[in-house]
Length: 634
Image (cartoon, rainbow, N blue to C red; front, top):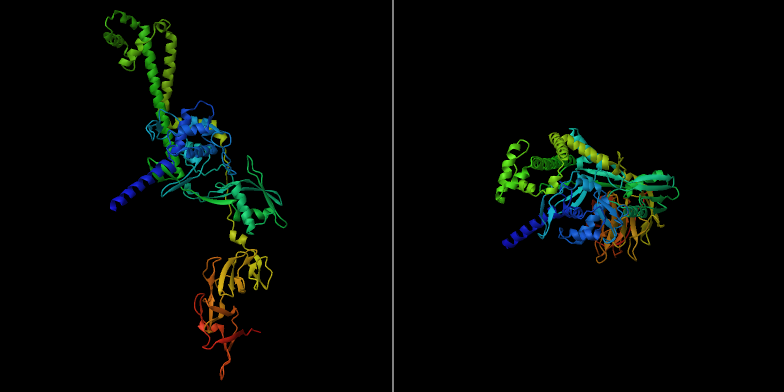
């Protein structure tokens, strides 16, 4: 048994680790989940500037992703909808309305200019074998932008989840520049749906946001919703408005969705309802206002970690400097190699070292002769020639030697030496170089991504106070109906937020919400009492056991209940004789009996202790009770 437990524990931990690291949680370094990274890697491999069918990209990505084509297609549509890394052609769905994308065979995509500029460099990328060992895939892409904060991310793993809000591209790049200059910065999210948000509780990515739709008054009787909240669609928003109208929380005449490229939901109002009063009600009772909680969890150096926006940005700044420094060092090495090759070639041809080879009779001695021939020129060379360098010289054709342009060679070396000086300068001032690089990105791409969400201090709408209004609830005792549209024996004056307590002649009771019409009693039964369930009202009930005929009395308060659930206020097999909230005395008449000395007596309800609704009553008399009358106060 212990072996099985250990085996299950080991397998579960492996599964949990796999889901966290390889499925649900993005890597902080490039802001991508594995399936997203594999899609981008595939698109980079096949990039030719033209659009590719999504179905084709999905199929090729399956060489790296072992979980089928459906998650690849869905992830590609999601990346495309965010609008940063992919250029899309065809119907990729509408995140505003919730409409799905077309099938993979009908839509096309390719890498965007931003992705090509900032996400790829094979010389800096570490590769590992794919799941079947036939290919190599990147461990992490060398992203030079804070992609995780730009795109945002959501994911649910085993025992943890992440919800990172998207931020504005311009503001993020500007914030990185500020950090490189030693200045402080504060960042807030920016959602593609726009709207208005209150960032008072954002707490650097650890708190929450309150967000509202952008609502305009077209005229005093018409409201137009122009922008919606994130996590909602026009369809879900309209459903929430219609639901609130059905429940009587708001009043609308009609609602129409004219959304196409931009959101446009028009609400027409009925008589006596005006736009200026309706807007706050929409915020209070519909998805026109939502609250979202951030939870920034990402993979950092192979382990899941909770971070803040500031920590992530500092991490990205250091990563950027590291990537740029590596690129400069690689280019510097390439420039030095070109200078060395051209200098070696110039000496070989200008000094006619090739003519010395005519005297060599045995090929094996050629390399020794060349080495000796270059020794007088070692001051002009960065290092001594190696075997592979000499082999390249031997492969130079006679035509190229004959047409060798010494002036052009020296000009090329001069340009390369100038570039070498620039690279050395950039390496010595890597922070300044990083700022210049970011300023270039901002100039090239900044205008494509303006801020869409407006930041404001939003007043809290007191939903309860807006909801509360006086209403008259009708009660039809005989028919057993309670509601706003019920005409009957009596009415209950209360607030629309109150709950109604109804006690029925079969000994049962319910607490119900106020609606237009609710059937409370069973067929053949009547309502004995209906009033506000305020948990303070004292009720008095005299009831009789149907078998023994013995009668009891009790006073009680209904304090605890579940809405619309049936309870009992007297035991099964008993029938109520009197149910009242009036504390006036009772006149209790006993069943006549020969030679009886006591035919009737009085009892005052206040003499009975107040108990819980399920408590048993106190017996009134040993003899059966004929009737009970209450003496009303004059």
